[in-house]
Amino acid sequence: MKILYGVVVAVLVLVAAAVAYAVSPRALETVERPDSEGLDQETVARGEELAMIGNCADCHTAEGGEPYAGGRAIPTPLGTLYGTNITPDEETGIGAWSAEAFQRAMYRGLDREGNHLYPAFPYHHFTKAAEEDIEAIYTYLMSLEPVRNEAPAHELTFPFNIRPLLAGWKLLYLENERFAGLPDTDEQVNRGAYLVQGLAHCGGCHTPRNALQAEIEDEFLQGEVTENWYAPAIAGEVPAATSWDKEQLNTYLTGQWTERHGVAVGPMAPVAHNLSRVPGEDVAAISAYMATLIESDTGAEAEAEEITAAVGEEPAGDNPGAVIYASACAGCHEGEPARFAAGLQLAYSTSLRIPDPRNLIHIIEQGVQPPEGRPGPYMPGFEGALTQEQMVALTSYLRERFTDLDPWEDLEGAATEIMGSGAAHTAEASHTEE
Ligand code: HEC
Ligand code: HEC
Ligand code: HEC
Image (cartoon, rainbow, N blue to C red):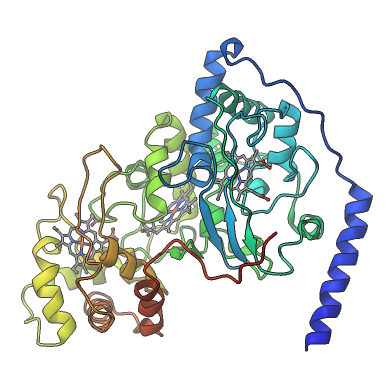
């Protein structure tokens, strides 16, 4: 086995070396950082909105760190990567990058010196964005205060820590092509598709990936694990109990509470928070396009209604999960559904209906908090209040009581992984220095 593995790696290295040689990305000249005073303010403002749609700050800002100065850990199955410093600092950021070098990074995943970049940086989506949008983001980034900060080196497992191998990955999976437009659709849906497939890179979290971490095109937005959460299917048949329409999507995607879908939580929360700060017509376009992808009848609505109607009539029973639910959860989750800050009737929660229990465990552990400084629904976290055994009893009870789906397999394993590690944001990886 070992020998075979070695041979495979050797072949990959040789292929990549040949490709790298043939393509031979060159270093681009350094430039003097553009004077921020001289930048066109309208372009800066537009660039800021586009950067928000692209969630650039989420991956490029460390917890408690300066915006865009890098250092945020991004867990992946192949190890942990760190968002880099993209403030205009000349040494540790991109201050010496020309607009051309920046565009090349966004379209072809190359840094200024010509090194291949990892596709955890979703350039395979950004490559669809128009040149003028990329230019606006560049202008915005150049308008920021330069921050000196060296991001930590990535911690990737062998052989993924060998950058030149990415030449092979790109050969297989990167099409350097701008968004071509959808046939036979109106302008709004087209605009939405442009953003969803490009800058907003929704597929970066919601589309299943193969072993080499490339998104599987035929399974566009069909659900995938991301940052230890599960991003549910949001195209075709979706797990949500009630289907989505344009208006509900628009409400949810701007971080607000929807009566039948709750609020965005986990890694979706910052996405929705960002979208609440961009021009309304862009989110409306995203919602219009998404509504065309989602099958309108989930078939589960009647069932959820029935379950909800039965709540309160049936005795809860003395199953340990039922007892915890009745004392710790029911007070909020069985309230009037339209009450602001009330929790959803749980028969409508997608977290109970997806094939993976981890979102439900995360939500119970962490609760739900609105973004800092904004009003919104609040749920306390139960971290430390429930043992793993109680968590398993509660979550298996919720799945059984509020859905008619099969029990989750390996609920114990998921509870151990999430509650045992304590840190939801650090991935297990053998720490190989780059
Ligand atoms: C999902 C996380 C993620 C998002 C979203 C993201 N990036 Fe990154 N980005 C990364 C990571 C990780 C790297 C480092 C890749 C590497 O070292 O190979 C990176 C690298 C870069 C680089 C190369 C920097 C250098 O010094 O080599 C640029 C430029 C960049 N990102 C710009 C952006 C912009 C602009 C956006 C928003 C439109 C964005 N990124 C969104 C994760 C992300
Ligand atoms: C103080 C009130 C309160 C308590 C107690 C509470 N919740 Fe919540 N819960 C909320 C609010 C508010 C939300 C956010 C709105 C929403 O998404 O429904 C929420 C969200 C949720 C969600 C996500 C719903 C969605 O959007 O898909 C789940 C699942 C959940 N709670 C389960 C529980 C469980 C299980 C318990 C008991 C261990 C519990 N909650 C206790 C108020 C509460
Ligand atoms: C950083 C990863 C990430 C990105 C990027 C992302 N999502 Fe999500 N999304 C998630 C996760 C995780 C959930 C599950 C948590 C929740 O339900 O709030 C989710 C939930 C959702 C839901 C709710 C599904 C349901 O049935 O409850 C919708 C709708 C959605 N995302 C749409 C989008 C759209 C549209 C985009 C692009 C504009 C997008 N997402 C980008 C991670 C992401």
